Length: 352
Image 1 (cartoon, rainbow, N blue to C red):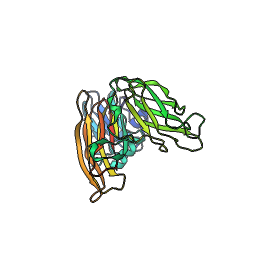
Image 2 (cartoon, rainbow, N blue to C red):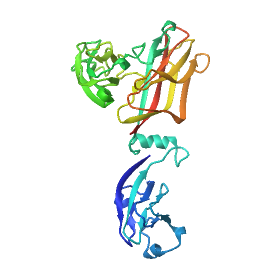
Image 3 (cartoon, rainbow, N blue to C red):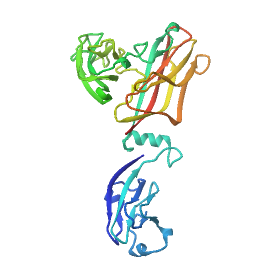
Image 4 (cartoon, rainbow, N blue to C red):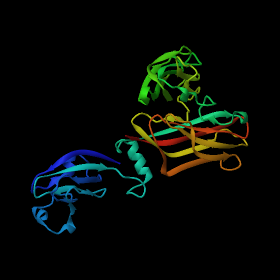
């Protein structure tokens, strides 16, 4: 991953400090691209190289930047200097490459993503739980309301109404007071807002939503949690329920997600586990629905009380390249009634 920065002028017969002029911290791995036909020299010393160094013909002490060429320095380099015998121009690309087998570990790469050090890349961790799957129901999606996830049925953005099953979830109540909505508007554009609750009376959102798969209680009264089940649904097409926050949960449990506008998604891992003690086995599916298409199985595994009740899949090569507007979900069936299953996945989002 990289972030292209400004061009830097090389003044004739002058060592130029690339780290200082680009504003990049020393030690960061960078790629230097020559934008002219004039060759240049690169050096990684902490101190500015001497004039004698500049005139040296022993390229063993330097990196030679050829006409329109590129050079990648080493991560941890103490300095980055460039020299040209005539005026020149180079471009600097900040490179953060902490993938395993490429100068670092998966953990380092993940930390860099979460810290915002990998430009144009973010990560989403989605997880959910279906507390009660029965044999007759076949496959059910993993969300707390059970059955098929109805949030994917929306075909147009609408105002969302939010309400609780308990009057204590209100602006001055002992339960939840304010809840954050995180979803997608028309064109699958990301948006978020905060709604102040009014107990069992529906409160309308300001924004319109075509997808809304995450909600979090931000403030609460003395109880510290939502007293009732909090529901968010489209206020015209009310059958399109986007979320339910279970009583006491303070956040949604929905293993469903839609890739937003301007992003491509790459599934890096997934997991599933039995969430209620049952002598059962369950088939678990990861499914994707590309825009204008139908749900297709992207991964399948089985969990069971007499075998592995937990499965964790990590993909060395990320699963699929998923365009904006694609729906993703996890579903499970069961061999015994009243079975609870939990599951989730991580997806890298890359700007396009």
